[in-house]
Length: 399
Image 1: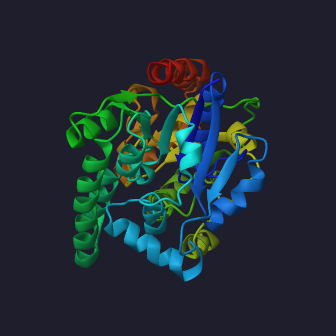
Image 2: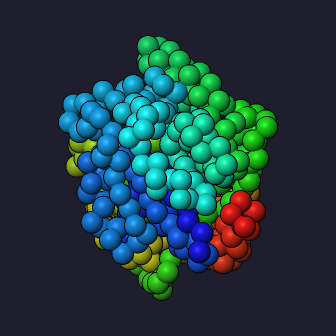
């Protein structure tokens, strides 16, 4: 059985609290059907916490050889330097792979090496120089250049806007330079494929629709007497808590005027204190923090909202809601990369229109539309199609 070594920014584990980790779990399952998978990840607090939780998954190890350690105030400094370096993985990890202390023995045994997240693709030049004959696969969960450009465009402070534009320009140069060292770059939408080909015209870019969906779905059990409006996501991510803040300030009051019995549930780990304070004063609103499973919330939700105004790439949370048959009102960013806008209850960036669509759906749910959306999502983002696509692409490299 061939071996694929995955250099990943994050170690995945069951009930992981971010969408990228959910993708990697599905990716590992697909690869494990025809290859042995091994994970190597930066020695960060989040990965040290994840390591024991991932005990039942593929073998995983931390890059403890990287120095200085990625802990405490130093980690914050390295995160800032990472942005300055074009959104590359942390400097100690980059330096590790420029010398002999990297885990080259494990990498030399690999039939293919993959780099999960654009930040890790910054290691591609070092890997290619050391292992010129080993296939390199990059998985860009999003194209960071676009994310930073959008943040710059939406920044209210001139100083922040200028800094984000500099960060975006540096990221554009880094992504263009490092994507070019890959044998294959995997992205999740045709939109991201076009962006990647613009950055690195010579690289082979392939679209893989993520294999999502519940392994043990619960039957839907909505309550018309108290319809639940649901948002899910890793709440430490600025695009998530920023979108929720906009929803709370500009949209939720109008929804409650139309449907006073509605309740908003914000499900996701690590919410910032600013969001906790907002929720504390918002009527009929609940912030769950970490939950072991989102399935009970999806089953009870009458409406899913994706009020995202920043970020890049396909939003897994939107697909997850489609796969569970929950009607969706979203912004254009929340629907991005999903080539079926007619299957949403509404796609709008206007707060008033967003609220009107939410009220309309809560009062008169379009279950037929949600069923069509679910059927479409299962055909495009279902596990069987995803696993077949992964096998097809990797077979070309490790046959």
